Length: 180
Ligand code: BEZ
Image (cartoon, rainbow, N blue to C red; front, top):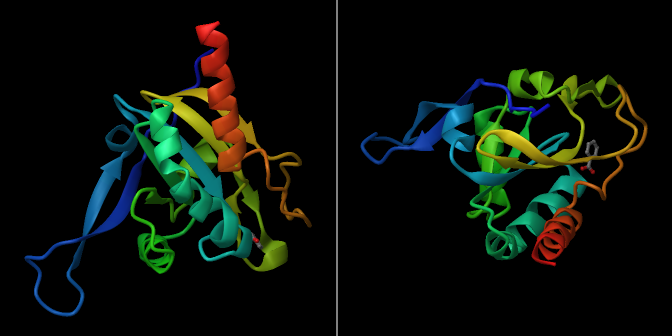
């Protein structure tokens, strides 16, 4: 059966130059359709903004490989995390990210409905996302890359299956098979 991404509303913060003062941002609600309808996208999800593996490898490597993904027919790359819009924007800004788009899932509703919400109370994090990546076509999951060992309060942080290098390699392999 085709699995569609859940239909939720994300509460984002966007810059608005018409707002005066030191904080020219406003709330802008975006739905799953706004992000996924009519596009082929990569979505990757991670346990938290500003955490070491996510900041050192996963997010910057997706940014570096953005053009390679575009060459494989990907329209957008999205990074989602159970963090609010202020944290996600601050993280993207601190990392100098301008190609990958961050999606704040502060309430965890999207992650829960994807079946990927896990407890990370062992780290004082509360409920967060298990690491996964996906190729999503017009809102339908086409390829799925989930780290092994999905569990609450996992003592390790497996990373590899959802890396940009692995997802790109798989996209290229599919293209080669289709061309043969
Ligand atoms: C990391 O990205 O390295 C990390 C993620 C979650 C908890 C601790 C570390």
